[in-house]
Image (cartoon, rainbow, N blue to C red):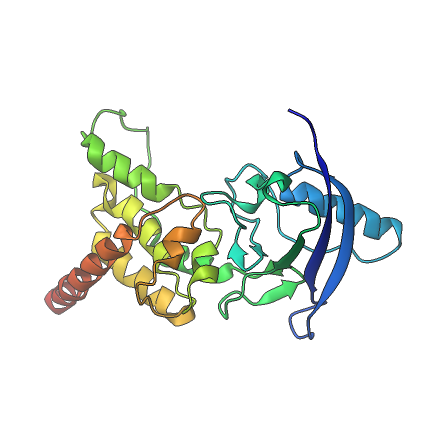
Length: 258
């Protein structure tokens, strides 16, 4: 397959710090390869800016394999860009035509304040996980893998939820800035398995109420599912809501007994 080159115009959000006023800056990118990833294209831009003694564009990146979830960019108004089920780092420049203008912004959500340029602070996600995204396990030798039988349908559903990479696209795409898809995925992958049952309702209550402190409410727009690079279904939100209702009853009864 031939390696086509294209000329692009970039319109990138620049902001020197959390309290600074941001603005768009325009850059011309000549002869960008079809085979370059979106982040590689930004690398080329930054190399040029550094060569001109200008500040490079700050953006989050790490694994560049669609696993870590750090490549959080709005591209032409879409979380992670125009290709479905794809993180920004997996998006290639063949999805764009020569002469295109590409508008690149950070996640736009009050729970994700901008640190600099295209980098945002997603520590609100960490607080949700810290509140209950774990199981308690006895120390000692690891149990045999087949000791607890788990139906394949349950294991598959738990693994589907566990695919969440915590990128924040669901929040950025949601008109309300809700984090229900992220929180529900993190709850479901533990609540569906036998190992997660002991703390199921405490976990659900703690994580949902921590989420509510930072994020907006879900009103079932479905934008989160459409933007998710791992295609996590909004069905997990229904499961979370069901467990949350149960948790309020069960946890209250446990408190009254104590």
